[in-house]
Length: 292
Image (tube, rainbow, N blue to C red; front, side, top):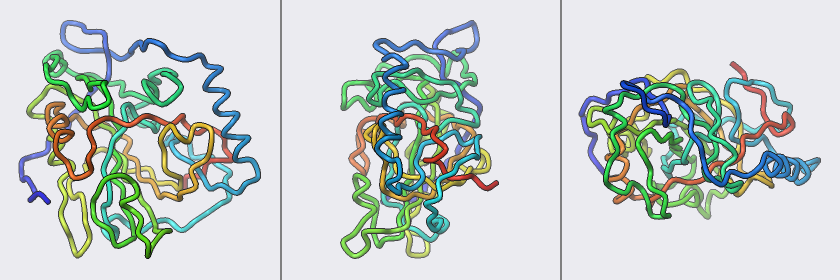
């Protein structure tokens, strides 16, 4: 467990983009081997078929700017994270959620969670977009690049657990149905030593007997809270049965890409690559209403 680094955390507006002008990179990207819209439509149809009338609770990810939902499988909202144990930290390549400052669709990708999701549509300077030579979080072969958008998930559990690899760390034999909360923060990667250090962002402490990530940003907007589920592309055609209370911040934080690479090389979660993205859930029957 690391002691808190008191270095000032610096956040600033940013972007995910590929076309370089004299001073900034503008939004937009092109992915090879992107599947047809019909493939994603078929996955959505399978999700509907496999959940119809079976009592599944509300699902994630969703558009956090849209509060409409008709799923009636309500469950108690998890306590504030200060009264829960941090059990896992991981991230997805591109944002799984849509809304706030990350509304640009990355494309359909490969239909299995790669090169899909949402990216930030702001601006980084040319200096921040200077390429890095190192392979960043490339254990699965795909190195992260400057300008990439990630959605970081800080997972909390009411069970008596400690931070460890996989979501299985959030469960125990004595508490197989704990209250789960995920704090979601979308970030963009910059070649910038003055940007947020990912090691600071993911610092872990024990506070009042609970494992905590005390440096989750507090200046990236009021979190949108809603009832949902676990995510990941494995649930594109079927529902997740786990119930999760979500808090997703609508603004993006700029993070030094080199610090993310160092974290992937050494962290208690054995995280060494970005995870895939689940299709955005759009069926109102699979969405909870968001109360604002």
